[in-house]
Image 1: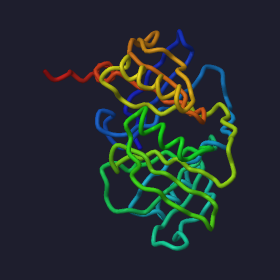
Image 2: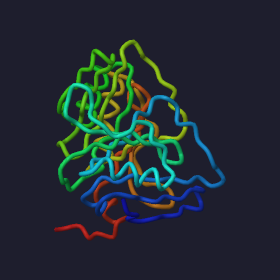
Image 3: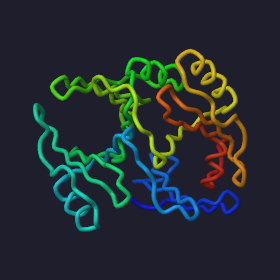
Length: 245
């Protein structure tokens, strides 16, 4: 990954670094946030992992090891299929799945969150955000099911249900997923209606962010996971990209 940009917001006492495998206008990015004077966080047990694809899992694992990461599953095939994967943790304790695949323009390809009711979660992301259920992975031998949600196959949201587990400890380390929208106000009203039906709530009403000016709306899903919808034009302005037309 490479740093695409940084920003410091002293009035709100935080700094960000945005990283990814390409420009933010066309690639998924991870936002690293430093809150002034906070040196540690509780990751909890609800955040699953981030997934990065690579043409050589074995080589990437050795790079992670050399940079101080913790290898929690050595590279090797997944039982029952041909996929080769590994699991590693960064110095802050976040878990990454590394999966061996052919060349792809978007190696940062998945975020996995654990949910207590898979059918409810799938319905929420379909109705509130217009995502599709791309596929369902059943692993009865390991007692879990994952619903893969998204707008296409390049980046997906994995909703993981572990049999019999209905609640998770969120901690305070993982913040949110950000998704672009053409109208945060209209999108906010859709989310509000789905919140009433399935659970969750609006945590920040639609409007501009202090110190930045970008319009957003943020909300929690029925499991308490946060999503931020960001105005597309405002986001392009942040990136210094002129809008067309």
